[in-house]
Amino acid sequence: MEGYRWFDLCSRQLRNLNGPYWRFHRHLSQELSTNYRTILALNLLKVDVEGGSPYGTSECESILQAQSATLSEEIRILKPNVIVFLTSWRKDEILRQELPGAQFSAALDDNIHLLARIDGVHAGQLMFRTYHPGFLNRLPGTRDRVLTTIVNGIREMR
Image (tube, rainbow, N blue to C red):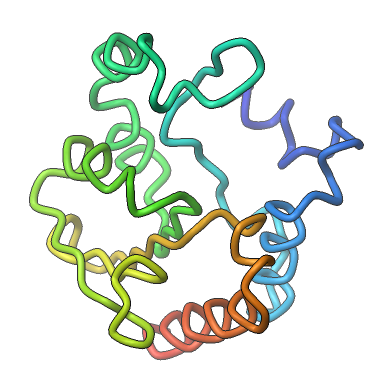
C-alpha cells in the first residue's frame, strides 16, 4: 500500500501527468464529481522492458507467470466498485487469465474492440475495457463517447 501512496496517481512524474492516460483519469473523476484519488489506476503488466511495454516481447510470458494472480489479488484487497482497463482488446487473454469467468460484451456501437463490458467476475463490480486514451484520442470524438458510456454505466450502478 505504501507504493500506491508514494506514486499518488502520477503526481511525482510531472512529465507524464498531462499525458492522455492521466487526462482521461482526471476527466472521468470530474464527470463523476469525485476526487481523482478515488479512482484506482493499475497496470496489467507490472514491469516494463527497456522502458516500454513487455507485451509482445520474449519476456512477456515469464512476466505473466511471475505476476500471476496479482491483479485479482489487488482487486480483492482494494475492493473497487468500478474497474476500467485502459488497454487493447489484444490483452483480453491476459484479463481472462487474471480474472477467471470474465465474459466480454460490446458496450458501444456493437464494437467489442472499442469498449467492452466485463461481467462474470465479481458480483457488484462494474468492469470495462477500452483502448489506451492515447489511441482513443486519434479517433475523432471516440474518447468522449467512450467516457460518456462508462460514466452512464457508473451512474446507473449508483
